Length: 171
Image 1 (cartoon, rainbow, N blue to C red):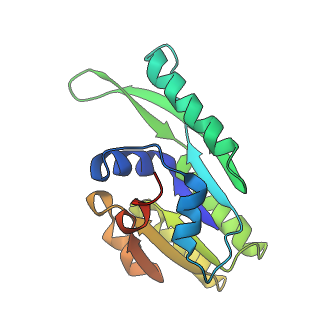
Image 2 (tube, rainbow, N blue to C red):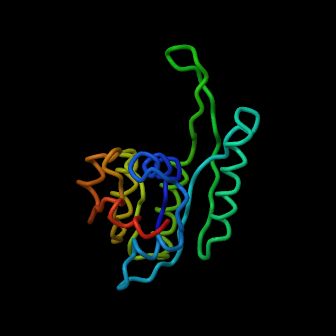
């Protein structure tokens, strides 16, 4: 199973590939390689504030529709929160996606729904969840972008791969 931190994935694609609209099903198959069967992709993100930027919101909704229509894929939506940054400017950030990913990885590991979890994120906050999944006897791999990789993930996962080598044929 593949667990994608959508916000992390989006910004990594934008920074390292220069584009964000890829074929999610093809990416999943490529990441799993020919020798393994992809059971399901879980994609986590949060909807943007429609009033803040209607065009960006519309574009994101089109992407979410593509995710929903991708075979064997589940879209899990968290909340978008806002706060003032140090300059007093309003910022938006995704809240709750990490806990959804961690809970799903653990729940599905304990339900024996997969043998190997592939976490697509560079966020080191997943370290405790990865350790718990491995204690259940499952393997955990990390697919990351070099620009936002946590060394903790690389140390704890059974295998780590840079996403850039898997996406070139997925756009």
